[in-house]
Image (tube, rainbow, N blue to C red):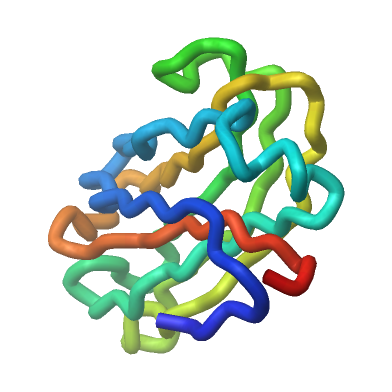
Length: 138
C-alpha cells in the first residue's frame, strides 16, 4: 500500500465485490473531529490491490467511487466522485493502483466509498483501503 503525505485522519477498508456486485464501505462521519478543521485540505486516497487474472480477467473492471451522503448507510449520495477504474488486461489481471480526489464537501454528513465489479470479476478475497488525508502539516 502507498505512503500518504501529511496526516491520515480516517481509514476504511472494503472487501471487493463478486461479479456484477457492489460493495460499500463503513461510513466516515464527516462532521466528526478532526475533519471540520481540515475541510479544505482533505484528499480522499484509495489504495486498490493488485488483482490476478482469476480475480479480474481480461476486459473486466472494478470501478471505485467516493460518496458523500446524508444517510449513515451511504445510500442516496448527494455527491459521487469516480476515483478510478481497474481493468483486467493482457492476461495479467490488474496492477495495484492509487486513486484520489478532493471531496466536494457538498453537504453530506457521511463519507465512504464503493466498488462496483463487472459481470465476471471475482475479487472477493481482495481488499481496498480508503484514507482521508489532510494536506496540512500535522
